[in-house]
Length: 205
Length: 205
DNA sequence: TGCATATTTGCAGTGGCTGCAATTATCAGC
DNA sequence: GCTGATAATTGCAGCCACTGCAAATATGCA
Image (cartoon, rainbow over all chains, first blue to last red; front, side, top):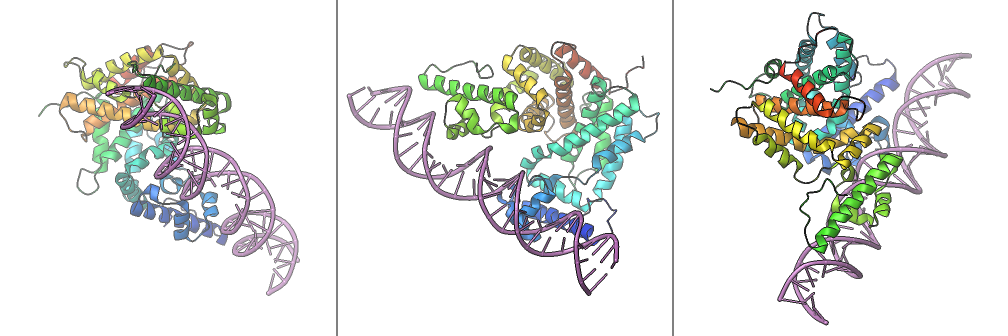
């Protein structure tokens, strides 16, 4: 449990209880969302399943969906850092590609992430509500490109690169079919290859 | 007024009244949003300004934001059609580029669109809530690429092309500075050029 | 004019979300 | 262990977005 939380668990009882409550709420929310559909689950239901009062829910999450959709703290920062730390000779898009590949390799093994991915496939109406999270990550990519190039945040090259790379990343996750289809990383390579070639149409078979 | 509505105004009084009410609600919503900020405006406020009952608001729009953010009916279909009708010798990305350029040329002249653009600049917290609209347009682009290539909707090339092109389009609108900066269409050409070159880093000056 | 049909409205209710103040649980010093 | 400072949980009252339903009103048409 709490697999999306930062591993440095505080030693105090208080800290541990908070982590546990957070995890319980997350788990209850995902489970109930998958069982009954997002709109048929109330905050009250989630709290009943997690054993806390409804009011407490909003001490942990700002919105009902956040219990299901939010990443662990620091995810955008880690994206940024990873891209920045790639070898200097890589072009921005290459560095982003490599950083995304590293990240996907981790996520493939993360049980919580896989469950959330399933949930999003079962209830696509949730996708729009991911926007808050997505924007944070896209901003992280922008920051990283700024750091690598010295250009400004408003530069068209900077913004286009970040937006294009991130949309390829999302496409890949959207196309992925756990189990049956090609591997996540292979899909990412495929999409990034298309981008590198300027989206030239594929040869007809 | 009602500049985002389809021009074929029905001749009957009923039709005209509905159009007028819709336009009044839209106008009141945008004005109040700009004056007081989206979260300080209630549906009741909007209805008071438009002279209808609060219950009526929800006969016209599904959510409060929709009065401000939704496009006119048929916008996605028109996007799709425009892309499909480009000359067959153009590659998908070229066809999308051309269709987007046509669309932007229209929008530049649309008073309502400019006002909404200003609103989004003043209150960026609204951007995530555009997702509903954005997804409809991206789907239209996907459909168009499917029609042009005969590939399936789930094909990685199809999805990547649509997502990348549309994200470039959004970047352009986001970077645009009405009045002071470069022209919208020039920005689009710039971004699409970057995409065609596979986001190769710009030459250092 | 008068009937069929659309539109508007009021009303009652659900549920997300918030501020506040009271209660309960943890912690640190002794 | 005991105690006061501090933090987390909870209940409560309330705002507001949004919905279904049925009554009232406006429009279109014969």
